[in-house]
Length: 252
Ligand code: PEP
View (cartoon, protein in one colour):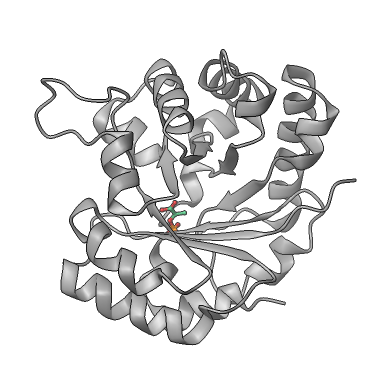
């Protein structure tokens, strides 16, 4: 099996002004900036990206945006392009987060366009998938995930697939304090890896990092990371505080 370096990612959502983001990222850089046993990244809001970039410069913490548009430029008021993110210092972009799907009506096809545009610009997409509570209760988890990954990854070749990180985020676990159990998460991660193998090949399946997201905290990260198909975490609430996020990064 391929060695997959864990990735611990922080999604700051609609929190922190530029000055607040700089303050938190400076603290984070001093606490964990030189760790190299895991990859790390934070995703501040757009307005803070170019302010946080120099703080992360000589650290191992990557910079991510939380979304982008698929067009390179154009009459799309209020949108941000992949090239703008690269020029602000980003290496990653979170795409298809359930809050984007739920509140801003992003479709699987939109997300697919964004994934292609992000990779073409040199960014690494963190592609979020996950079922709602109703879908889980109706035993639709796997069929929902099938549709999300089949459409989301449509047209990606081997080289593109090798740049993608998947984040499995059950919608019912995001911001609710209800984490999936280690076994529930592992079951889905194993399924996703199998499907990635069928959509691409076994090399992509064994190399692709699949993160878990949904109320990850310092007290539950260790159990999740002990699961064979969980390769890291996408952390919302607990990533806003440098001490808590550092404790998650130092789970080992
Ligand atoms: C997220 O924002 O992707 C997330 C998982 O949030 P939280 O950790 O707060 O549940």
